[in-house]
Image (cartoon, rainbow, N blue to C red; front, side, top):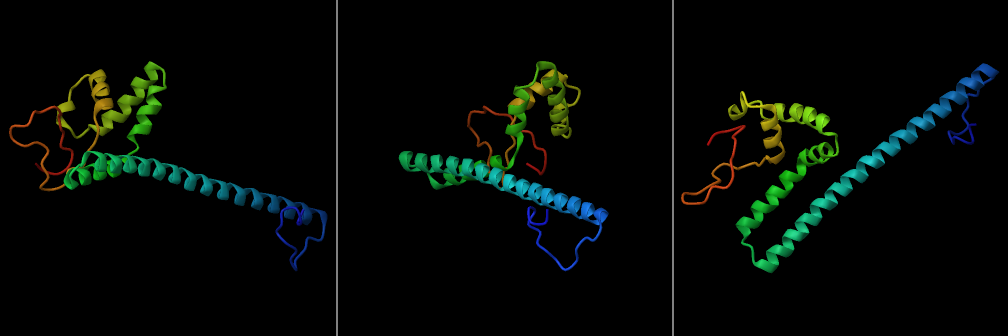
Length: 168
């Protein structure tokens, strides 16, 4: 057993059958624990790499658009910032997961998710659950830096913004 689990031969060896059984169980437990930890770490690194690859692919596409259509640097930087911020959020995974659920479970889960998400937004107070769920799937969070404009006078308004944190 010592040879199979590659723990090596030490100066202390089991003498009777009970010690040998205990040592064998300890060796197997150690190998299984080490294998599990190594596998979990490899999985985390693999998932991180695939997530980063998706972000790099999006940035590569944006770079092609920038060069093909001569996008100015200000817009390019906003797009990069949005891609990175959006990439750091996990809301897309939840929405995709919810789409695969049966309708009733989807509504229950969505209500739990979006009720907490919009808890501080006064607009949603006393609104129907179905309305919150419908709006919740369409809303995307953005981060606006200080001194950055969302709308300028005379622009057509096509979106609605809720301020969750900070001032306007």
